[in-house]
Length: 107
Image 1 (spheres, rainbow, N blue to C red):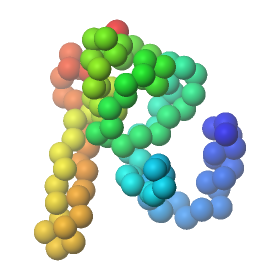
Image 2: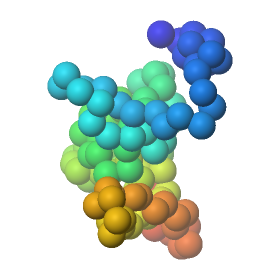
Image 3: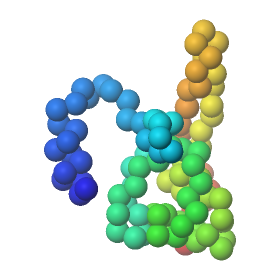
Image 4: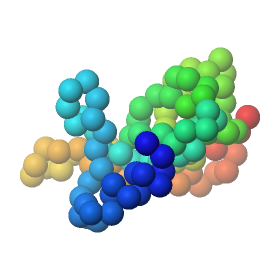
């Protein structure tokens, strides 16, 4: 699927619906980011997933040998907190851009 095909597929869906990632037989996590990977493909992931393969990381992010467990949020210059809703017991992710550009990964 190309980005153009994805946009076309999304056109008929409710704009306020959450986007979730389906893997291992179930929708397991919400999508927090989309990025152009070094390998030339677009990836979608949640903030806490590690990106193991160099081809799946953004250009300029550390390579696996330097940071084998680089999380999506850190790779894209974000930090996050996970806060549990006391009424529903569901986790909510609160993202914020890193305030110190020196903390953002570079090559």
